[in-house]
Image 1 (cartoon, rainbow, N blue to C red):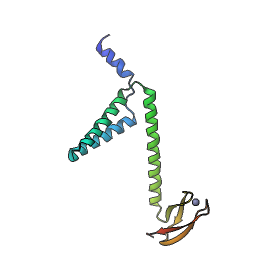
Image 2: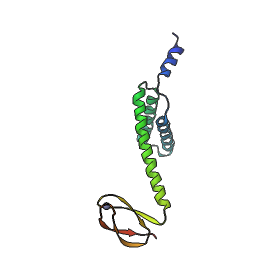
Image 3: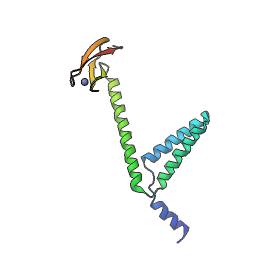
Image 4: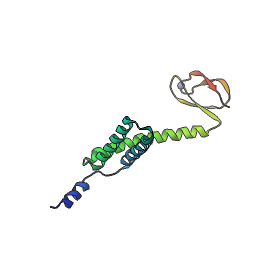
Length: 135
Ligand SMILES: [Zn+2]
């Protein structure tokens, strides 16, 4: 067997690139670029760690473990994306304010009226003060 064949065999069993790989490399690149201006040793160590982890994942032969990591990362990513979507929706809703009930933590959608009001939670019937600063 020649070297080229062995190399091909090695890389054929590697996990390869996935979304987490690209994001790790992207974050490492941005941090490396920002480190040109900051010049911090700890930041350089973070860049090295992220790059090493991305390369380790790329070359790993334990496909199931890497797939699990990618799925876990995907869940976190989708959670963040979902929360960003909710935040964007609430920001676009100019006629209402969103307040959390202090007792049951339910989110209440209240009409946006400037001043001090008393709100009643429909879930736990708790009454609490609400301050709306901008009308
Ligand atoms: Zn409540």
